[in-house]
Length: 117
Image 1 (cartoon, one colour):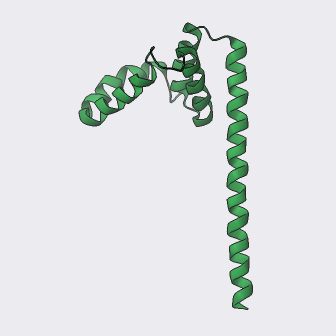
Image 2 (cartoon, helix red, strand yellow):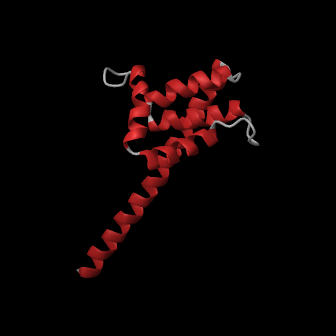
Image 3 (tube, one colour):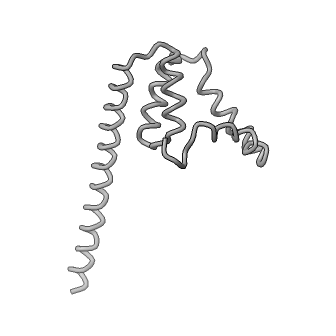
């Protein structure tokens, strides 16, 4: 983690939740639903999915927590590496998809310029 992000910062979570209890409780209920053991997706895979998302959002706290949870639920180093590459490929796909939008916007602007001339 960077000098700005420290694992001990997580001890402040209860204070943050207390500063906005309605929203904090709603967030924690949502978060806790992801960590349930009785879902159709086994917990190990839930953690690998969460880890893949954490890689793309680059949340150091999430990478820390979900790596530990994935390991505790039986994930291997190889599975974590594979999740990283899956996340990287999906993120790259999103970049490609957004480039298509940029080309369309460019073409629309080009057409307006040509029609105005």
